[in-house]
Image (cartoon, rainbow, N blue to C red):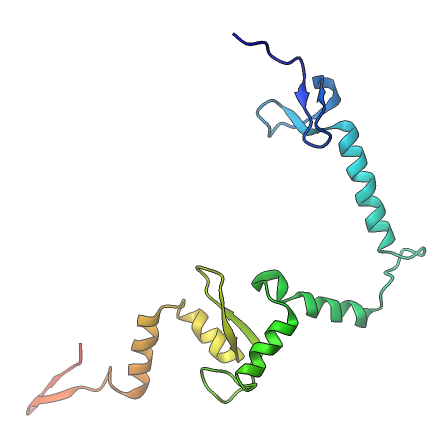
Length: 167
């Protein structure tokens, strides 16, 4: 059998250290954290400094409410959809500023495929919500269109008093 190393490798610094150099972690198979105590302390101190620098000396935020709101709006499409605000605006401009489904309401909501995550376009609130209600199923959307047009529910007179519903 091969020799076993007397310690454990730290994923932070890459050193092989004895087990007491690692804090406990019940969720790990060996019962120890993956980073040594020194690396955890360095990371914690750096994280603490970053958070403190985001605040002023009085403990309040360094940015005003309006600036935080603008930054939040700019970052919103990037987080779930992977597009920037400029890319969203370019998509709206390419659609003429209106929803590409109903062609009447202003486009403001990013539509995406829930299976692949691919952005399809920018829709109005109602059309985006409708697609969500239909769970992006084209067959259900076609049946709904047939229903609205009166095809799906309109019975056909076959004989006097005998009606046939479309299948």
